[in-house]
Image 1 (cartoon, rainbow, N blue to C red):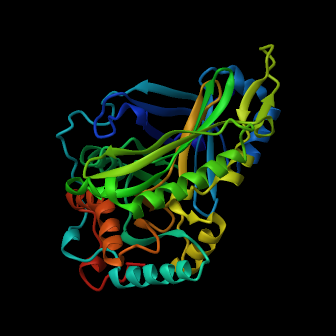
Image 2: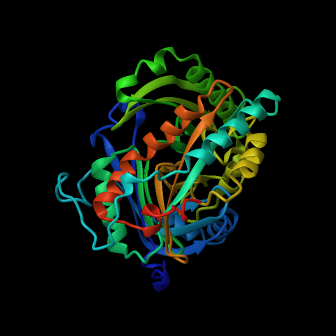
Length: 416
């Protein structure tokens, strides 16, 4: 294999995963860290990457080869092919001490003494959604608010410090720190979008949607709220339908239904749907040094059927996507997109990019989204409280790092 392209050396990727069935999502036990090293090539579509691998099957001779990628909500993709992807049991590789905090030398403002998200606009949008629901256009839709936190140049070290502190203040099962050409991603995502594994000599895919949120002192809401349960079941049915499109007949199963998980400051309801990929959605690439062909998911097809995730769109899915575009009236970018990896000989996983800070390097813009699922029974005030709750730990971390923008304490002109 040729040496990595020098232009790709700085493409850094870290994804942390935790099996949800361990019930340790609020600790660091039984976690894995996935690191990518020695970049080979970069692509802007799954199809181009797959064609490259087919034309260069020697890549598969490397036992640790694979790729890392992110995909925006609007399906803009950046993929980096690596010679080595390492999966390790959890080690404190980024922080020397969990009580240690990092302090950037950036301008200071008090983020918590101003209304970060636009409450009036969000509540108006909730009411619009409920009107569409009343008219029968949709059953449920997820809408979000965006705020630009900073419009200043942030260094790699600034961003790494943010990730280190976020990891301390808001440990989550699918955290990621990605530093590619156009964007840096600092994510404390709790949600797995697609997980690919080999089970009984079959390629299987799992999806674990989150739908249902409650504060730590309001845990019983998730046990007794018919609204939360109905909303969750609609998304489970949607995910079953999506997974069914790419799986063998009768292989789709709900292996975990509406389980309650404790996170740092809240509870979530989570289910897991599993299916065995059908042959149409598996690439078989001739491998010169092995008798058997290497089977790789056809990511181009799979993402065309399953992306974006149902938990962050709504149901019916296509109608929800259309209404999100109309109501939010802006692009989501990487928010509610996905980031992940695939190791050709072992499998891989993609999260959903929620609870995520995105740094646009071209515009020197650090932004944050937060969203909530809306149904006919939604209370607009409560839904706004939910988007604040979901972003609370991130905002606290930003304050600790003194990330700033004067507009936030002035007229909020960057609240977009």
